Length: 142
Image (cartoon, rainbow, N blue to C red; front, side, top):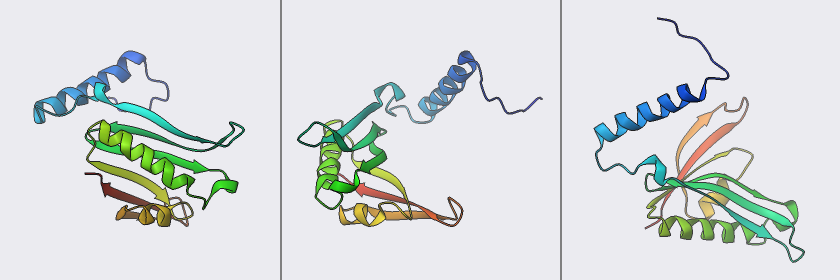
Protein backbone atom coordinates (compact mmCIF):
# COMPACT_ATOMS: atom_id res chain seq x y z
CA UNK A 1 0.00 0.00 0.00
CA UNK A 2 1.42 3.38 -1.05
CA UNK A 3 -0.14 6.47 0.57
CA UNK A 4 1.16 9.90 -0.42
CA UNK A 5 0.25 13.52 -0.99
CA UNK A 6 -0.60 14.42 -4.59
CA UNK A 7 -0.77 18.13 -5.33
CA UNK A 8 -2.03 17.69 -8.88
CA UNK A 9 -3.97 14.43 -9.13
CA UNK A 10 -5.31 13.41 -12.51
CA UNK A 11 -8.82 14.41 -13.49
CA UNK A 12 -9.83 10.76 -13.59
CA UNK A 13 -8.55 10.19 -10.04
CA UNK A 14 -10.45 13.24 -8.77
CA UNK A 15 -13.61 12.01 -10.51
CA UNK A 16 -13.17 8.53 -9.05
CA UNK A 17 -12.98 10.02 -5.53
CA UNK A 18 -16.11 12.10 -6.11
CA UNK A 19 -18.07 9.26 -7.67
CA UNK A 20 -16.91 6.89 -4.93
CA UNK A 21 -18.30 9.03 -2.11
CA UNK A 22 -21.48 9.76 -4.07
CA UNK A 23 -22.06 6.02 -4.58
CA UNK A 24 -21.41 5.38 -0.88
CA UNK A 25 -23.87 8.14 0.09
CA UNK A 26 -26.52 6.84 -2.33
CA UNK A 27 -26.19 3.36 -0.86
CA UNK A 28 -26.49 4.66 2.70
CA UNK A 29 -29.36 7.12 2.08
CA UNK A 30 -31.42 6.23 -0.97
CA UNK A 31 -33.32 9.51 -1.25
CA UNK A 32 -30.32 11.80 -0.64
CA UNK A 33 -30.31 14.82 -2.89
CA UNK A 34 -27.77 14.17 -5.67
CA UNK A 35 -24.73 16.41 -5.83
CA UNK A 36 -25.74 17.34 -9.39
CA UNK A 37 -28.60 19.34 -7.84
CA UNK A 38 -26.09 21.63 -6.10
CA UNK A 39 -27.00 25.23 -6.91
CA UNK A 40 -24.11 27.70 -6.75
CA UNK A 41 -25.09 31.37 -6.78
CA UNK A 42 -24.07 34.92 -5.89
CA UNK A 43 -26.06 37.85 -4.52
CA UNK A 44 -24.51 41.16 -5.55
CA UNK A 45 -25.02 44.71 -4.24
CA UNK A 46 -24.11 47.62 -6.50
CA UNK A 47 -24.22 51.34 -5.85
CA UNK A 48 -25.93 53.92 -8.09
CA UNK A 49 -22.80 53.97 -10.31
CA UNK A 50 -22.98 50.21 -10.79
CA UNK A 51 -19.89 49.52 -8.68
CA UNK A 52 -19.87 46.34 -6.63
CA UNK A 53 -20.13 47.27 -2.94
CA UNK A 54 -20.90 43.85 -1.48
CA UNK A 55 -21.98 40.35 -2.13
CA UNK A 56 -22.50 36.77 -1.05
CA UNK A 57 -21.14 33.60 -2.60
CA UNK A 58 -23.25 30.61 -1.63
CA UNK A 59 -24.36 27.11 -2.51
CA UNK A 60 -27.61 25.24 -1.93
CA UNK A 61 -27.28 21.50 -1.38
CA UNK A 62 -28.56 18.84 0.98
CA UNK A 63 -31.47 21.13 1.88
CA UNK A 64 -29.00 23.69 3.28
CA UNK A 65 -27.90 27.16 2.25
CA UNK A 66 -24.11 27.24 2.66
CA UNK A 67 -22.93 30.85 2.85
CA UNK A 68 -19.32 30.63 1.69
CA UNK A 69 -18.50 34.32 1.97
CA UNK A 70 -20.09 37.68 2.53
CA UNK A 71 -18.22 40.91 1.86
CA UNK A 72 -19.25 44.55 2.22
CA UNK A 73 -17.19 47.58 1.28
CA UNK A 74 -16.41 49.88 4.20
CA UNK A 75 -18.72 52.65 2.98
CA UNK A 76 -21.89 50.48 3.11
CA UNK A 77 -21.28 48.60 6.36
CA UNK A 78 -24.01 49.32 8.89
CA UNK A 79 -26.38 50.66 6.22
CA UNK A 80 -28.61 47.58 5.87
CA UNK A 81 -26.99 46.27 2.69
CA UNK A 82 -25.75 43.15 4.48
CA UNK A 83 -29.27 42.40 5.70
CA UNK A 84 -30.61 42.80 2.14
CA UNK A 85 -27.96 40.38 0.84
CA UNK A 86 -28.84 37.80 3.52
CA UNK A 87 -32.57 38.21 2.81
CA UNK A 88 -32.04 37.62 -0.91
CA UNK A 89 -29.81 34.58 -0.33
CA UNK A 90 -32.29 33.05 2.12
CA UNK A 91 -35.23 33.69 -0.24
CA UNK A 92 -33.34 32.00 -3.09
CA UNK A 93 -32.48 29.10 -0.78
CA UNK A 94 -36.13 28.65 0.18
CA UNK A 95 -37.09 28.60 -3.51
CA UNK A 96 -34.51 25.81 -3.88
CA UNK A 97 -36.03 23.78 -1.03
CA UNK A 98 -33.44 24.65 1.60
CA UNK A 99 -34.62 24.35 5.18
CA UNK A 100 -31.37 25.31 6.94
CA UNK A 101 -28.56 27.81 6.57
CA UNK A 102 -24.95 27.31 7.63
CA UNK A 103 -22.09 29.79 7.79
CA UNK A 104 -18.54 29.90 9.12
CA UNK A 105 -17.08 33.21 10.22
CA UNK A 106 -13.98 34.15 12.17
CA UNK A 107 -13.61 36.09 15.41
CA UNK A 108 -12.68 39.35 13.63
CA UNK A 109 -15.42 39.07 11.00
CA UNK A 110 -19.21 38.94 11.29
CA UNK A 111 -20.42 36.71 14.14
CA UNK A 112 -22.54 39.52 15.71
CA UNK A 113 -24.00 40.36 12.28
CA UNK A 114 -25.16 36.79 11.71
CA UNK A 115 -26.55 36.51 15.25
CA UNK A 116 -28.48 39.76 14.73
CA UNK A 117 -29.96 38.16 11.61
CA UNK A 118 -31.24 35.08 13.43
CA UNK A 119 -28.24 32.75 13.19
CA UNK A 120 -27.36 30.64 16.23
CA UNK A 121 -23.83 29.63 17.22
CA UNK A 122 -23.41 25.84 17.14
CA UNK A 123 -19.64 25.47 17.43
CA UNK A 124 -16.41 27.38 17.88
CA UNK A 125 -13.00 26.13 16.85
CA UNK A 126 -10.46 28.03 18.94
CA UNK A 127 -7.00 28.98 17.70
CA UNK A 128 -8.13 28.83 14.05
CA UNK A 129 -6.37 30.72 12.65
CA UNK A 130 -3.71 30.94 15.31
CA UNK A 131 -4.72 33.44 17.96
CA UNK A 132 -8.33 33.68 16.73
CA UNK A 133 -11.45 31.51 16.45
CA UNK A 134 -13.72 30.16 13.74
CA UNK A 135 -17.43 30.23 14.55
CA UNK A 136 -20.08 28.03 12.93
CA UNK A 137 -23.64 29.34 12.93
CA UNK A 138 -26.93 27.98 11.65
CA UNK A 139 -30.46 29.19 11.05
CA UNK A 140 -33.70 27.35 10.40
CA UNK A 141 -35.20 28.89 7.25
CA UNK A 142 -38.66 27.33 7.36
